[in-house]
Amino acid sequence: MSGNTVDEEEVTVTHTGPKGVINDWRKFKLESMDQESLPPNKRELLRQMSSPHKPKDDAKGGLNRKMSAQEYELIKEDDEKCLRRYRKQCMQEMHERLSFGPKFEGVYELDSGEAFLEVIEKEHRLTVVVVHIYKDGIKGCEALNNCLDCLATEYPSVKFCKISAAATGAGDRFSDDVLPALLVYKSGELLGNFLAVTQHLSEEFFATDVETFLNEYGLLPEKEFSPGADEEEADVE
Image (cartoon, rainbow, N blue to C red; front, side, top):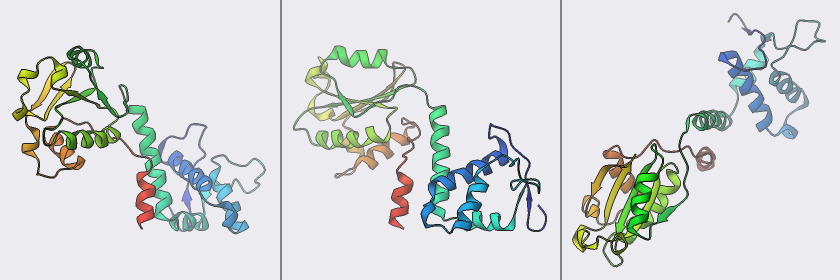
């Protein structure tokens, strides 16, 4: 880079490398800005910046051949909210390319011991299965079910399930004093077996407390990307 320009070569159809990223950012900015609110000269400059190709009719060698001081200042003056949205979009696209295994919605109610065994043995090998064994009226069971409802939206790659102790067919193994219980499986293997799990939590606990507890044992995958998180942060500002 020298003086007021930044050398930039032409790019091909596929946008790879730093120059491709710059062009993708330019195009994203053009699409996300309110065009009607911009002065005509600024709108035209953004339009020119959004194209990665050298105009054939440009006698001076192409507006995209160099990034002028005006272009640089326009990028520099971009508001942070737009930049964060762009970064989030890139992260989401990367996450979608790298994500494997099925996705789930909500907490699944298991109605029998057979259903319990089936979800453990037949679920995708990459899927973490969290099973809450509960009993109505036992302190902490209802609260834990509510917490799992919240976590299921945060971790759609995890299969959260619940089953009453009586439905397991082994109610004598799950007496009131060991409930609520959390069992965690992956590829049919038991990774975590937590009896009377609320003893490890504060008297009044929330989904974040259960999340922290499971993360202490490394039982949850990396949290899924939330597309709306960035907009929520921007609204707070």
